[in-house]
Length: 402
Image 1 (cartoon, rainbow, N blue to C red):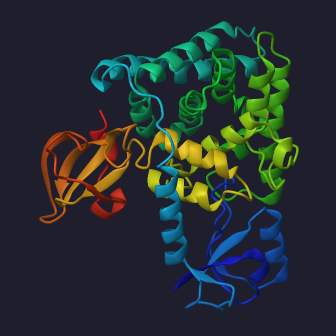
Image 2 (image 1 turned 135 degrees about the horizontal axis):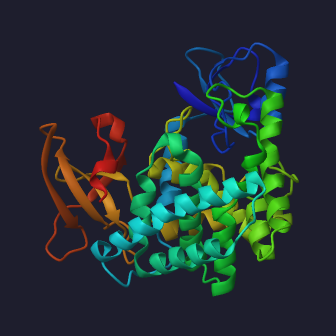
Image 3 (image 1 turned 180 degrees about the horizontal axis):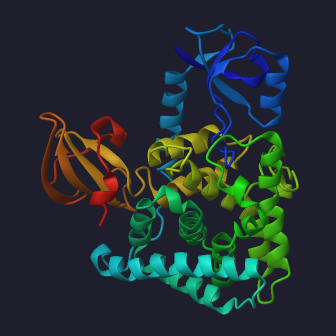
């Protein structure tokens, strides 16, 4: 049986099934095995881990433990509660209308961010104007229909993580900033900060940045320097605002001070830093990477809730969940009819009733004719039972998003 315990209860002889630290970027540490030495526990504690999951059938139990099922049930209830907050931004055009524009912007964004980073690396002249224009286009697309860029954000290749992550983060920050009613200038600066938050990785040695195996403690310290590099490069770039620099600089800071580069705590981290930390973790843990199988969107939201308080701002996490939906774009859901559908549009009035594209019947375990269903439409009788993992049915939801 899998149980969760506080780090203070971890002892030699216990079997760790999950270090519960996917919020650590570039996390390639071994995540499971028997604790054999006290210094291993010290290393885990220094990473900022507050709770770990143990397998009590493979190692010692603890009186401070609660089952993983209990934790998931509590996270599910917290997720439902977060979904009851006030509505987000209503779309102004249909998904069909916006998806064509969004595809152009998404493709252009990856190329532009890649070129910008390469120019900085080569010491070439830096022209920030195209980045500002791109930020405006991203923002306008989100205002017209946020579902379009959100759909494209779920169609990603693990070998192109760096650029796709930067673009996706800018979309998420645009959604988040809109929900929180930021002024146009503040919103623009946070989007630019998200687009360029990983700029400092151009100074990270390739053998560390692209290492497929586990990073050594020394290599991880080098990797962590990228946040400081991003801050310094942006601070020295003409045409970059202060909020942009802060957004990029603080994307790895954590409330308990376990983050970097400055180890800031609580209110020492700006609201922009606390927001981008949430979006950065969410996008990272739900993405497939060379060394990491991404969680489903719903699993990712539950993890944000679990890590609230110690690492992430609890109130902002709830607001983030409300702005991207109980069932974010790309979620695979099981309907009462037994059909599976992928969420392609959220419903700002009732998050339990998104637009889904059905493609599979679980009762017969067979594909069915594609059909788009608005669960909020009058006369529709189907409802969502729960989110499911595509791996359970060997489905690639990316094929059904556009």
